[in-house]
Length: 327
Image (cartoon, rainbow, N blue to C red; front, side):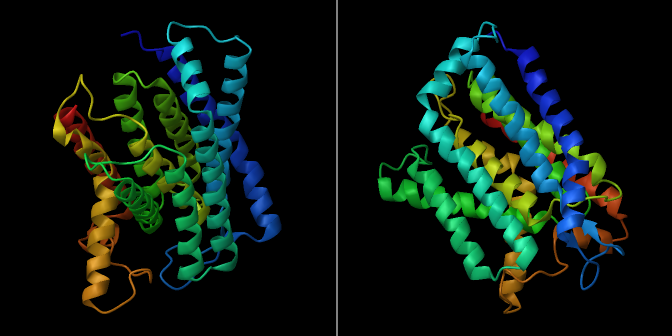
């Protein structure tokens, strides 16, 4: 199989560069509009930090994606698999449009939460509407159950779960962005290995955009993802887990559908354990606390930087193992 490695590298590099260059612009905009995270309560930073990361990451994905699509349409990009990618764009035009609009919508929803601290219900309704739109666009989870109602329900549940898992995981410098970059890279590799180059390109774009943001956020934060960014990361990873075909004729392993759970294991485990802890203590699961995996590790005496690195490493090991085991 002839992988378009140069094109994948260009997608990563373009997203990285644009994300890096866009961040200062979005930081200034955040300062001007007072879109900052002030210190206090459970927060560990001592000075206000602009919530610019989500917008920079979105810019880093959309600009090269739009530019690449134009180049494809004009026939200015040529490599052995270019025809397959162009065919995929044409065949999935409506689906891709809905997904792209969903990415913008989820970022706007997160921005509204950053700006106005939305209550749980309106935020959940916004997430639900976006998840329904993505499910209605055509690509849904089936889990071998031949029921349209089931496929809608499980797809919407998956999207909501992953979005909130990454929203919850955004509690330490670099943690959410790093886990997002690792997940995007693994999904890109899995998709490329299965010849699903359009999904792979999306993964490399997301990985590059998050990698471009990380120097601004880790180990010392000059910008945060904010809810806009954590919502976007969770949304895109949830979608990328749906788009590829894990169970195929070439890979007739019934447990292949579990690969996304392995790739996203750390955020999903964190969401599960913190939700159970809050339920046992009769607290609403959406009310934040300091019982996340990251907080528990720091209470064991591990520094915050090492905690983030340890969780990154854990996510990479489990994700690679799951990808190799089921593919």
